[in-house]
Length: 245
Image (cartoon, rainbow, N blue to C red):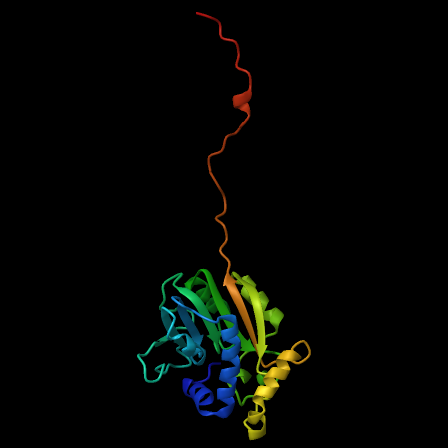
């Protein structure tokens, strides 16, 4: 089930909890991808809050939003780069994308296998994808006060297995959103403390969001030369004597 784009916009841009969540996830993403100079970068679902730092340097930035969710113009005060699309039919050429980030997309899609196949199609050789999903073991997936409380939460193993089945190879992992999913002022004032403490205790404390960076696996073409020599050593065999004419 997709949330309406207005609900997502209000959460990330008009609430203290949403702005704190946006910052925590974006900071982790910037550690994984510190720059995107000359690259084509695409966000799917509602990933546009994470893309703003890349606007000045990337060759192209595109925000794709699924039809069941709806679309909004983005970024504010600049030429629009967001577009409405079908969940499993994106208006992008095959192999066009260098960096793909998906947030509020995979866990809400009714056809996740087809969605991952489309993500694989548009990603170029050597391209990287970052999948951001609710953590099954975290508090955020159990609270319907945030967008991460909707859809299917994942464990690390579940997400990696699904990505592997569709040609992706998981490379790096991150967990974030250790702060409680509460709008109360006390938790908002201490959000940075919760995040820093959570990162230090990550093997013990479960964050609310899983982030898996994966690369596109391109298989070598199968088969080889169809024509083959039946007896390759025959040329080394001694020739029969030929009688003189």
